[in-house]
Amino acid sequence: MKRWKVGSLNRTTAKQQEALIKTDLMKGIVKSVHVRVITFKDWAESYLNLEEVRRLRSYKDRVHSMRQQLIPFFGGKLLTEITPQDVEEFRAQRTKRDGTVPRLQTINNDHTVLKHCLNVAIRRGLTVINAASAAPLPDPQNKRERVLTDSEWMILYETAKPHLKPVLLLAYHLGQRLSEIVFLTWDRVDLHQGFITLRGIDTKTKKPRRIPMTPAVREALGDLAKVRSLTTNRVFLYKGQPLKRISRTFGTAKRDAGISDFRFHDLRHCASTNLRRAGVDTATAMKIVGHRSEKMWKRYNAIEETDLVNAASKLSTYLQTNTVLTPAGSDQVAGSLTA
Image (cartoon, rainbow, N blue to C red):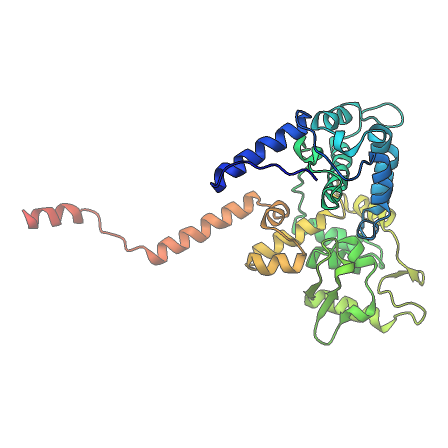
C-alpha cells in the first residue's frame, strides 16, 4: 500500500485531508500503489469460496447475483479501477433475462452483494475504496405495515390446516421467522421452563435468542410433543416428514379466510405491534422478536388509528387524575383580594 502524509498535526484537518485523498482515488486522479493486482472476476470467485461468505444464509442468492450479473459486468476490471460511476452504470443497465427491468429491490440486492464483496477485499488489502458504498442506493419504499385485526387472525387461525396452526401461532405470538420455525428441533424446546432457545446459527442475525412461550404456544407444542416422531428431531411435521414449505397451505388458509395483501412474514409485524400494545418495553420486545436495532423495531411496529385513539384516552385519564382544576373566576377573586 502506498501511504500519504497530510502534513497536519490537527486531527480534524488531517481527517479532511484524508477525505480529499480518498475522493481523488475514487475519481482516478490519484493512483494507489498495491502489492497485488487482481481482476474483479478472480476476486469474486475467491470471495464466494470464503468460509465467512459460504456460511451466510443468503449464499445461494449471492452466487446467483455474482455469476449472473456482477461478474459479467465487472469481471474484466481490476478491483482498483471500479468507480462509483461504474456501479451506477451497472444499475442502469441491469435487466432480467427477458429484457425487462427488475424491481428496484432486486437491483439493490445486487448492489449490496457488490458492496460486501468490496468491503471484504478492503480488509484483505486488495483495494482501498469501496465504490459500491460511494454510489447511491435508492430506497425501494417497500415498507409494509399490514397487521391483522383480531377478527382476521381468529378467522385465519381457524381455517388453517391442523399442521399449519402451530406454525402460525409461533409467528403471530412470538414473531419467529419461518426458517426459525420449520427448522426447530425438540432439543431447543423447554416445555418445563417455557422457553424456546435459538442458537446463533439458527437466526438471521447470527445472535442466539431465548424466547418465552405464551400459554397458547406452550399448549400447542405440548400437544405436538405427545405425538412426536421417533425418526426425526424436528418439531413441525407434515405426514410424518419434516415440514419444508407452507406456501400452498398458507395461501389456501388466506383464501378461505378472505384475507388479501398479507404475507407470512407480516406475522412478525403483528407480533411486534401486539408486544407494544401489551406494554412490553422496547428492549425486551426486541429481544423476543430478534431485532438488532430500534430502527428495524419501529419499522415492524405498526401504529394504527386505534392506537392513536387509545393514546388520547390514556392521556385524558392521566390529565383528569393528575391535574388540579382551578375553579372558574378564581383569578378574578384573587385579583380583587390583592388589590
